[in-house]
Image 1 (cartoon, helix red, strand yellow):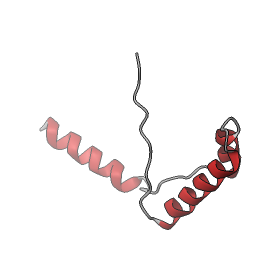
Image 2: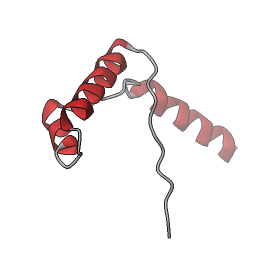
Image 3: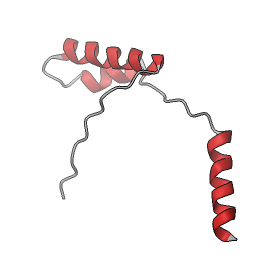
Image 4: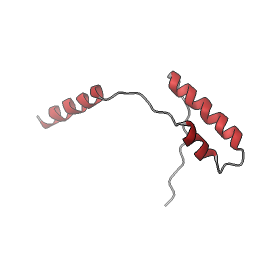
Length: 68
């Protein structure tokens, strides 16, 4: 009974909330690339990924391992 309730609530949240991805703003892109050595290349790459994300294409997201 509890599992059925949990699954129905989870399904309801999935349907109610928009399943779109949000990209970075231009200001956020500039802030991220501010400390990079090749700033213009960083900005160009992030804007290219932003355009692909908004079009619905797949993009690569680097995963940085967490060190303890």
